[in-house]
Structures are given as C-alpha cells and as structure tokens.
Image 1 (cartoon, helix red, strand yellow):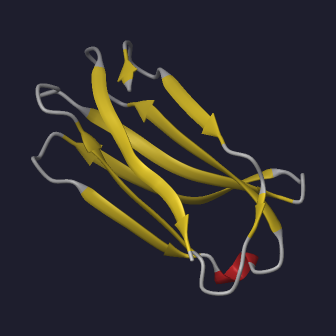
Image 2 (image 1 turned 45 degrees about the vertical axis):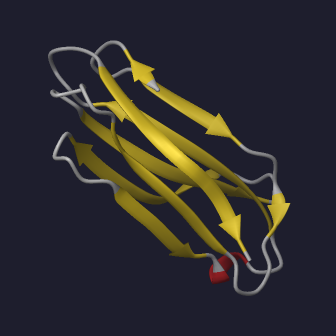
Length: 108
C-alpha cells in the first residue's frame, strides 16, 4: 500500500464471519524495501453482529528491516458474527510510506 501524505490512511473491510473455537487472526506487517522514512500505525478493528467498530490491537512499524508477525487468539468472539477491519495510517511527517499487510487470515 502506498500512502502518499502524512496522516493518509486506508482501511479494508472484510465480510462478517462466524468465529469458531480455536480461531486465530494471523498476518505479517511491515514497511517495504525502499521506504526508508517509513513510519506507520497498523490497526485491527472489528464489529460484532453489526454493532459499533472497536479496536482490537495496534502496531507501530518503521523501516527497521524487521517484519512483525501478528497471531491473535479470537476466543473472545466464539459464536459471534465478526467483521474485521484492517487499517494503516502514515505517521511520517515528511512524506510517503509504502507498507504491507501480508496474508491476513483467520486460521482454524
């Protein structure tokens, strides 16, 4: 994803799905090579049964050569119909950032 200006943001809304016992949210996040001034905040929000949007977690990423693996237990949502919302915000005060969400998924 390319976020051109400071404070630009992007969200991806996924269809609601039932969460089962043992489900986990798994993904990898980070800054792309060449995005040397990368500074971004990633967020995982959710909505249960069409209710209000709540935040589940946030991660700050910078161009440090590392990739962050996310592996979250979803047991608090078992039996509920949950819509997950992936977000990222450009926190670089001087320009664009290039970031990625890699294979975000619910694993059973």
